[in-house]
Length: 198
Image 1 (tube, rainbow, N blue to C red):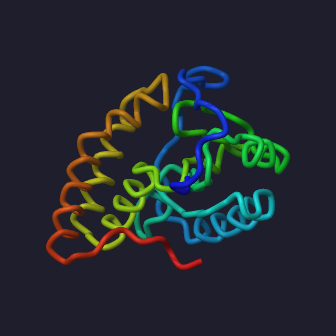
Image 2: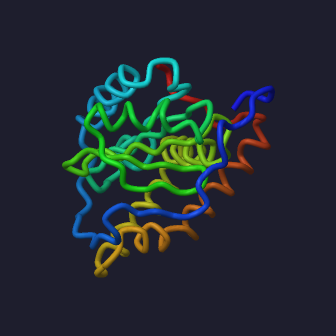
Image 3: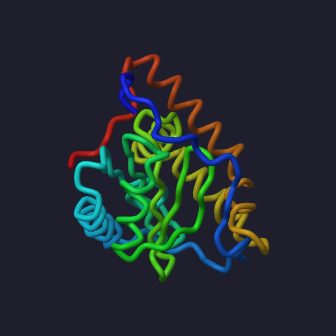
């Protein structure tokens, strides 16, 4: 949100996972050259629905990293000016065919009915957006970290997960290490995670 604006209302304080926990039954797929095109298609759909409300739309997650095996779910992060102004972004996204999955402080998640595209919505400037981009850019540029991340995911998917959120949490330590190396490299070079070309 711009510094001279205040939220329209207080943000939500509880975590609401619409539909409750879901068992994870997905396998990793080898990198699919169609994933960037799927992202571009949904970027246009999102921008068409939100107009000026979409401050940024980025491809994130494993499907955004060429050569990285991934669950076949394209993750997208959308930045909006005010996360509390759901009428500006959530209603239009639902009208565009996405379904609400998560409403929690600072974050909303909608997805396609087929569950093959997840759209994460944050307020502009939220540190979570930079964290997503930092991880993506590090995995794109560093083969060793990309290999480590893929090996970790393959090992975790050998186990049964009754909730996809538990699987995501199990990757946290490895992701934190990759991000720490990315931050250290950024300090050395003076660079930072940057949005993709539009």
